Image (cartoon, rainbow, N blue to C red):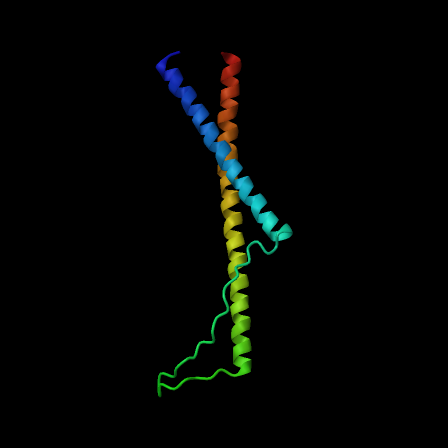
Length: 123
């Protein structure tokens, strides 16, 4: 086998493996995302220790500001909404990354694998 031909075979097999790895990683991430969203719904919930109420201090007279129960409830709702928005955006980032891996990996794998198959037939 010529050196040039050997390099070509190494190139084809290397990029076939890279494409296959990208497809596998993308598929695993999509399956993981689907399982977290529909089967194991608490898997991407972050549990944190309860926060102690922050005692804001007025910038004018340096006195402690006391939150009313309505203000505290509003603060809690806003925090829960922000947590949910963060969870949704993380899911979308994971989905976008997974789809990108599949879009790049599938053609990379299929092109190089088909070239290998064609060259094997002609050899």
